[in-house]
Length: 100
Image 1 (cartoon, one colour):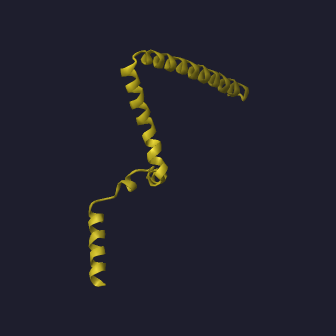
Image 2 (cartoon, rainbow, N blue to C red):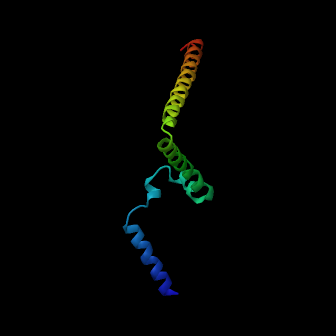
Image 3 (tube, rainbow, N blue to C red):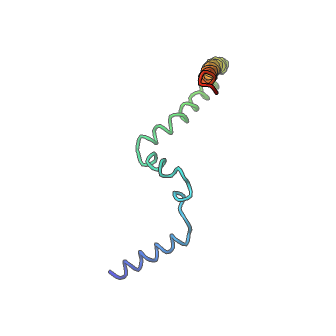
């Protein structure tokens, strides 16, 4: 029994000598800790990579896909900018109405 406690104390002192772990240094470690413990997280993290690989293969096979993707991105960014401009206008109107 004493050998086990001595081994545990020795391993604890080695960990303390190494300094704080990454969990202690990262303020978001407690929030992000659960992400890596769930099995579905791995799948969700792989989806964007798989999609990018598939898009790259599609561009190599059919270069016209690149033109369509560029057009889709331009349309999407334009729509997002219009929505943001509308929201900023509404926030400004509410601020003026509140007396600010």
